[in-house]
Image 1 (cartoon, rainbow, N blue to C red):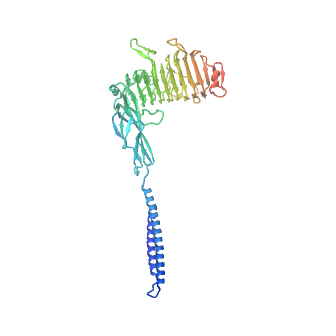
Image 2: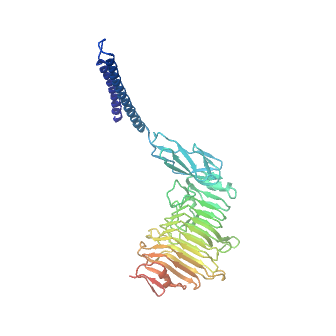
Image 3: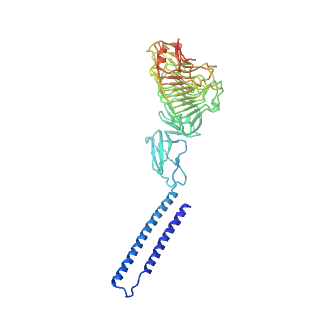
Length: 521
């Protein structure tokens, strides 16, 4: 409506100028004096000059009027242009990965809002062109296994949207079988699995990589539709059952959601994964609800000739456990068990579950445990059976918080009386072989908060349980313990409690009393 008023105003100005010019011209010439042969030549010249001056003035007025008209036209057209141009508000892709086989192509079609946006031009780029390339039309070509992000950017406003791309040698889509794809796969190939729910158990004995829809994306951040691996009800038989059994080295599980399915009874022990083999990578996965050890990585090898387990025949080296989420497990035992391993444990979150037990045995490889968050109702980290000859372990920059005991907490044990952030047991003893240097464990820059521990539990910052040898080294530096009832309980070993109290932060009033650092009441 306002623009129409501007238009009418413009027309009025034009008409006014034209009419003014016409009237003034007529008036000028109407007033022109006539000599009819009675005026002198000089008078005629003066009259002509006067007429010309008037005409010049009229021309100048006309030119100025035209300039004003042009300016008004420009302003009007500019405002009309602004009205008719619809700007881009957003650009987006569906929130799930595109899963492709090497050599496949697929065109990405983003949604641009509003639908009537004037300029919908988009440019595309790839985060890793060794995995996927993209052309100016959004056509993605899968060129190598792995993950990449395709980014679409609008020409109008520079709005962006990202599309996660997962590429495998073999692709599994919903309603197809991951295990069938594994049987068809050759050693070293990559199986990419699309979002969906897959109810099957896996038994893995060759080196294959499994990439779920969220491969490469931390389980502890917002992400798209999941690749869910779970039980069928028919799988839950006997006293215990495992979803994934792996006995091969070099296997990768990246970007899956392991779910117990809710079928198990309290009397059944159900776990997500048992793995044996070196150079394993278990990363960016969610482990949800299993009522036993959700992840068990062990050097144990079953001896079929005599029906026994050999825990020391082949250690597990170079395990990478990274950016996983372990959640809602009611077991008071432990949530993750790592036996006879050397490894890196980084960026994981344990939430509403028991924590992690690490049992190096005599493995000299050592390990690094850093930047993890453990929200636990009974246990943070348990360093256990680090025998003579086991390598150096470091726990750095971890956060351990107490949460209330869930109503459905399961056995073992039937009851639990302690909440512990760091539990150290069987540290430095001989084990199966009485040789090797004394082990060393370092705790540095960790933050413990036991404030929300269940009131029926006694909360410990650090608890040493026998056997612990005097030469085994446990070093604590710049750790903070809040909300604990007992700072340290040294039931065995030769840890200098005064030194520990000086180099770490305990609640105000804490003091060394006997074999404990006690908190003032």
